[in-house]
Image (tube, rainbow, N blue to C red; front, side, top):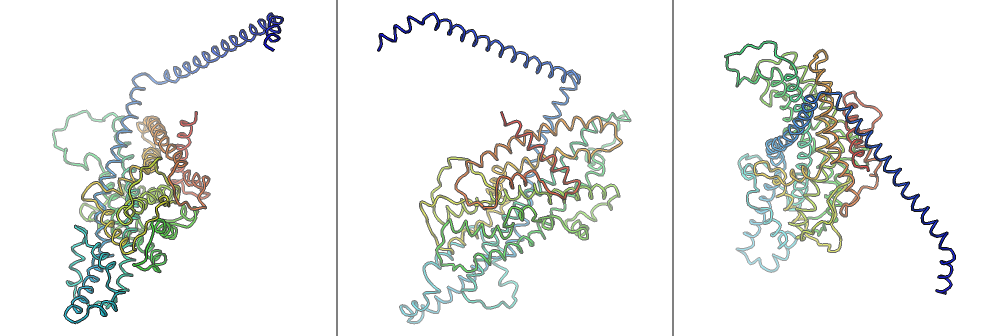
Length: 566
């Protein structure tokens, strides 16, 4: 066999050599042609770049690049200011919510009832039979649950004193009624605080980014416009903000005062939405009943569906405007209550017009599908931190498992840990954890706030949403007849598109991570098409302001996809 093969090669060695030579020559010729084509493409690309650069003088190109870098730095500083603003405003809402839902006061009454029963039993012969007859009401589980409610620093002083100080006749409630009220109040309070924190976070981003965009444009226009008078003034106007900013300072001051509505009125509407859902879902459960972490996640998802919407379409159409901004007839009332109205002179017509424009644009943003989409992601992160981290560690005593993939959430998802070790705890113990976590959620005095930090770090769509607000609708802010503003418009467009592309690239990375998420419970009606539709804000009927915003959001997302696609 080997000899026959050798003889065949010897007979055909000339043909094989010619064939190998032809193939080699063809390969070399092909490589040469490909290299020439590549060189031609590079030459054409470099020529195009050179032509584009030749349109603007070199100093102007440098100026545009510096402007874009300046815009990015101002945007990043603006987002940091948003976080500190949320921390400054959050304690006001927390105090109001805790005062309206006094879990600690109910716990104190339960402990008082238990102490009275023990005092009645100790003097008599009540030992065996009496304790047995009272076993449904006094047992070790109740004692442990009540003691767990009392933790250091979590009892609100006004609640502890309010019961005796008010001196009002109170309805006599039995132990079962008190425990049921503790159950509903604890869950409602922690869930209401999560919704309040999410809304306050995104509402503050909307407010400060709208004002940041206005202030940036004002600075660019002032630099582009040559001064009409070059004389030096000896008067001291360093502390006169109105002299520096004109009517903008008073407009900004009035506009920021509208956060008062969420802190004092909007949370009541949130509580009115949450409490009936909690009563319906958790009402049938007994505080002594055992509950697992997976069941808690499922019950939490049921409440969220009732509050936020059961389907993707319902969540997109859910209106949050009434929780964030007052109706038009109560705007003056909000300004007076917040301490703005009456402190200075009455607002001019120009200030009122600017304020109206800001409020209208804010309302358009709040009603946009993109707002609902980002708000859902913030709620996902808040409830995940509460259920999957805090309750899992403190109530179920689960050991933290390192994640193999970055955690991400679909449009409506609640994290469920692997079901290999299904631990259970008494519902009463879980209520104690929720009662304490309410103070952690509403913490604004002792940084960091773990829930706010999780939202800022893990919900990257929030930063993209802020970037689109900060870098879109420049034409609505520029004076139509100002030549200097018109000259700066092209420069703003450059900064807008470049920064939106940077933020959209982060958003695209986040969406690509969803395929590697941890075990989660996902609403079945949420699919990729629905999520994309919510992201792009495609609705048949839109207001002009909303349409402009959604177009900018859509462009940012498409630019990000183009950058990440090879």
